[in-house]
Image (cartoon, rainbow, N blue to C red; front, side, top):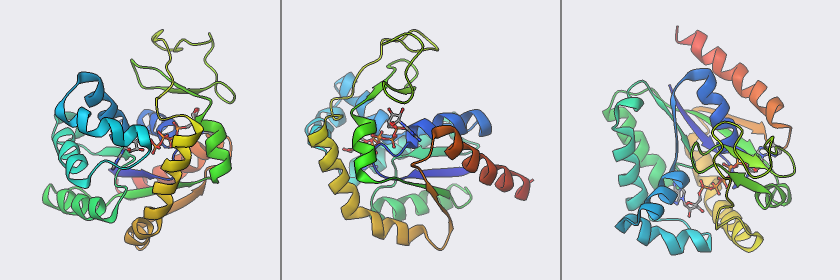
Length: 219
Ligand code: AP5
């Protein structure tokens, strides 16, 4: 099974990805997390991505595509995977189509979480993340049991550098510029637009229902 999570910054892609992994057992890959990992490791790719990400822009298709292929070539992706934050451009979508076909994977299930810009700015500026397991929290909506510490591994939660209002607005502009063509690319396929403004557990209930139907359909 291949799942693509699509939607504006802060719509809940990472939050839902975590739950979907619990349900399907497939590997979740966030291109944002991969890029932050490269930055932390001080690689050439990380250095190239650093300023672009800090300004809220998009890293080049070529760099992201190469990084993606390298990640999905690992054994934990043999049975399928979920992509959070990829593809973001039609070029990336076409590239992914080719890679999936070449490797004999099925067409993707595309889950689009629709949320308004004002709501996501509020969510993102209250986000905290665990550096160990990448789990996502929110000081307003989903706080950890103990402030500042991950419930699962005691990782000290951090705030992403691009989670300030100015950068979030720029990320939203980048998303708006590229959204329609990417949606058009997938709209004739297995595409599902969901209302992401509801509580996380309500959104997951709907996702879970549609994935169960997919699993039964392919049994
Ligand atoms: P990336 O890391 O992918 O960031 P993003 O797409 O901007 O999305 P976010 O991670 O901010 O949000 P999310 O939808 O995962 O929401 P979350 O679940 O965390 O990309 C960062 C940068 O990397 C890009 O700007 C770009 O520069 C670069 N990049 C990455 N991929 C690229 C690509 N393919 N091509 C080129 N460049 C690329 O939720 C947000 C908050 O809301 C959390 O605090 C959460 O607890 C809370 N929340 C979630 N759901 C709900 C809910 N239903 N109700 C209330 N609160 C909720």
